[in-house]
Figure 1 (spheres, rainbow over the protein chains, first blue to last red):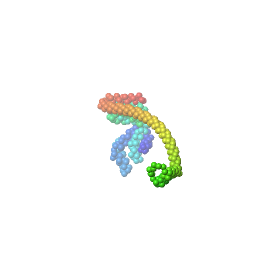
Figure 2 (tube, chains in turn red, purple):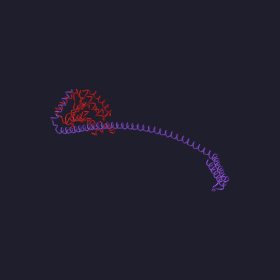
Figure 3 (cartoon, each protein chain N blue to C red):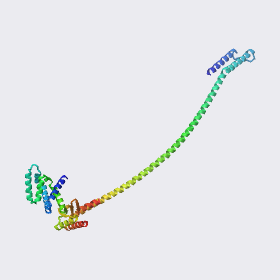
Amino acid sequence: MKETVVARRYAKAFVEKFTDPGSLEAMGKDLIEFSAIFESERTLKMTMLNPAVPPEAKLAILEAVMKRMDLADPSRKALIHVLRKKRMGIIRFIASEFERISFGVLGKVRAQVTSAVELTADEADSLRKSLSEFSGKEAVMELKVDPSLIGGVVARIGSVVYDGSVANQLQSLRVRLN
Amino acid sequence: MKKSYTTALGLLLFFSAGAAWASGGLQLATEWSWARDGGRIINSLVVVGAVVYIVSRFAGPALKKRANDIRNEITELNEAREMAERNVADYQKKLEEIKTEHEKAMTQARAEAEEIRKRILEQADKAATSILSRAGDQIDMETEQARQKLRKETTLLTLAAAEELLKKNMGPADHKALLDEYISRMERNN
């Protein structure tokens, strides 16, 4: 909870600083991508969070990673700021909050879509359009496949879930008949 | 009393014996002799007089006293008898009363016992009816529960079978149809 509050403050500051829509979108992607790498690479995370490692060394490592990822300038500045403020431990919260706030500014919404089988490009496009119309914002889909759904699709936009899966229908039947 | 009689008898025997001795015994006589027979008569009169005197002097009062005593005893006994009869009558009356009371108590006790018996029987009857009714309700409830359980199990088994069938038989066309249905439902809700 505390991390989210602090992360929201940082994300808001970044969104206010980089108001250009193109920068916001790119920065959102960069921060999400960086936070994913940071969380998955255990060595990188431990080094960056270790107080015994000098700040210069941490900065050098960060610079190297950013260069490798070919991050845009605003994203680099934002990550360096986070490092200097010793808030790298909550980078995933900052990235998530940044995306949420920037999506609000850009009129976009993130839709986590889970389907029983992989969707074709046309199917995904149709679904994206439908979700955009439904939410009133441009839906940015995050696709996942889960065969346990048996069939159909589950879309989550913010805290709202639109469940059209066969598994859910069977479960509803079970609950109703019980 | 006993002493007076003994004294009178002793005196009578003494004078009789003295008269007999004085007369010189009983001799067979064929001729009247004033000395002899007159003496005997006088002696007899003396003896009789003595006897009369003794009897009137001692035995009369004793006998009278004895008669009075007997009369008194009879009177006392009569009184005692009457009292005893009265007591007997009282006891009999009391006995009758007790008997009546006993009969009454027995009748009342029988009536109460009968009442209690009826009440117990009624209560037992009610309890039996209630138990039967409850048992009936319980049987109905358990039957309904068993029916519902069976229905539920059947439904769950059917659903499990349906799920397995769907998993096996869902093809690309089905997935496409489900997605189309999902999209059109979202459009309808929009």
